Image (cartoon, rainbow, N blue to C red):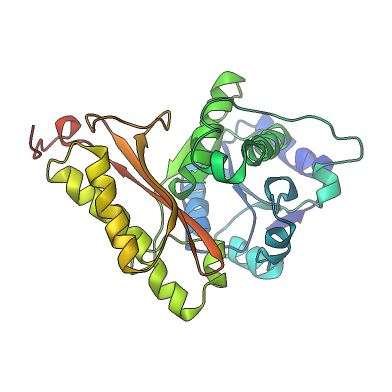
Length: 292
């Protein structure tokens, strides 16, 4: 595996494979690899001729300097894990390579950036995500890029600007990878104390409670949401939000009569975690086992 830190070099390395018609896959990351990242790399390796993993902790998407400083970093371990999985190139640029002096352009997506995380982290967070991912697409020119379902709102934002700007890349959103107790894998989990790590499992139980209610025939989003809130309360977790929204536009639902996304965010101790669960409404499902 080659580790590359400049735009010019990674473009030069990919020119030949691209001209030869090889399928290039990109896995964008901020490092501190866990099994969620590795699952994306395996998927890319299985489906593509050439795999590029980007490793860039994007300072623009942090609205707290302390959070940026505390973000876990272990580039040597990350490089070793990527090499073990057969990644061809690890693109690990410095901040100045991505944001050179005079950088003054922002990619901004309306609508889907203004709810949920947009309310709590600010729309500028998603502007930063959209801008850096657009840059990565322009630098690497992948045929396909892989993202995790855990960051569902981010994936929807990326899908939207790819469509709106006619960027020729397929976006694959892969299932969330979880710990044995259901906690979604995240680089931030390393910040949890043992006690908070145990409490954090309630986030998945809360989402599972919503899913169980819908599968049992619940159509009232408020009632389904109460099941999640009760589960969080038992773990003494006060969420930033728990919502049931449409799976495509992230708008609140007045009735659960279509595929829905249950989303939540909560601070457990000093660590803020997000999670979500796609839920297929029984009327739309193959089994049709819900109440009308």
